[in-house]
Length: 306
Image 1 (cartoon, rainbow, N blue to C red):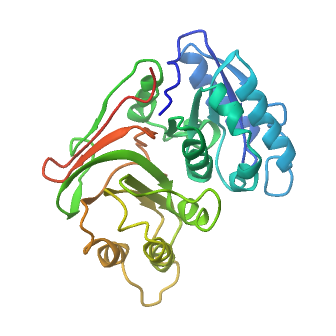
Image 2: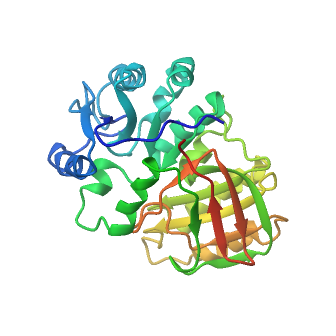
């Protein structure tokens, strides 16, 4: 496990778009938040490029990432937004460069692909948290989500309990292990690739947006058939926003789908965490040790910086 150095006021962070193109006006609004934290912000050279549904060509997006990693003045990378595209560049990332220049990497959603590949190739701890254009710039960006960026300045053990949201126990128990995971559809997209998510002995976080129950069913079934559910030390179910069926057809509920796949597992499973496409968005480091307890209805996560 590699921890990045904590941020200090006056440090420079890089903002790049490795997936879909950001709205530049919203991006500028989001940057103001980081400037108020006492940080300088440097934009990727190609951040305003548009190539269909991508923020520039694969080569341009990859170049921005490598330039930010190699630049010693950049202490962290906060992604502009998700969307689609990180999986297209995963095999071309210079992981040795990342390992030799460890720094904070922060984002979620489509960024899950990069979180998984970087952690498994280098051991670097990365952060699952709200992004500049798609979250920070929005009117509903809340105080708790903002406060959680402070974990980048001061090493902080995080504690999630029912003081933050109602938590539902699906399978009782306690387990500790490395916290991994993120967006469910992106976890599934790694299967059968060199970047396949490793879940054995891990606490696996899952969240998603806009996926109807039958789609979540299909993805969990694929994880089950790949052995990824039974291998896990525990399952943490985050927010599944906008998951209701779009058409008035017979459907299982999302709750029924979860029970089908999780009830017979031998590891603890708990749902209700405000982690994902939601506000507040409880940002967490991935790759650190964590403890899940259904008896205490809590999740404790070790610090992600040093």
